[in-house]
Image (cartoon, rainbow, N blue to C red; front, side):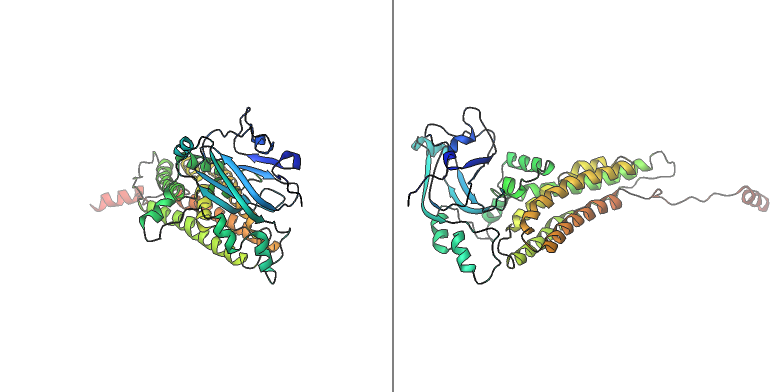
Length: 387
């Protein structure tokens, strides 16, 4: 049987997504078959490109030549759309600058006999054909040992290094994830584009902390501005709002992802081709989706209920879209009712958080002080006569 280079535009391959582009070295250079041309990335890392084949293919050998690349990660998908990606290969190249100095030809990775055959669409339910499906997906132990040999081993969970990796994230990555949470684009999976390459807790932790103080401080200022100018009003800071806001925000950012992660694991045991998200990835999505509520909480100081509710709808629409577009691919292959109920529940819980924070911290009663008793003229005259 004649073997061909499937990653060529002449064979029907197509670059359908690239995170950066240069006029002289466009992404299409990856598949033009010319060894003198190449794709140059611009901007910060990580960078990504997606190659789509016109039909299901079997990959027996994969060769990639790269320059100044520290980590290479390859994911696979059998969907017609660029969604539902699963990790296939991940390799570390160490210090890219040192490696390039030692080898001017760059880093080359060659994988023989990857034996990758996609599954048919849609995948059959989990059952008697599970062993055959695992073979088609390349999930057997020998393939894992060979393909993931270059992956770094994680430290034991009782060591400081284990938790340090969760906060090992670059500033530009945090900014990109914040930007992605503010500008959700239909058809682009937030986890795959921003999180999966390096999930972190740094961004979610500080976003939640900032949101806690933004809500507590803005709530106090809002209450102060409502009663500003009243002679009988005495302002008293409500420090308890900080602890209440912290309890609500951090409970939501951890317990809801934990419940959703457990639910997806359970459904994954029922339906074979459900997308799998790790607990850390789900926490990342929820943490970064809360960023838009920081400026929203500050603007809630404006003592106009109509303005506040408009801000709630905007923030809920943006952050809710991130959650819905991220988790819909994870449940859409499930039973239709269960899939819709899951997404609706996610959005409703998010709505409950935003509306609850607005109602409790900002919709304060008109009078927060004790009423003063006033004497009538008759009472005053009677008091004067009795004296």
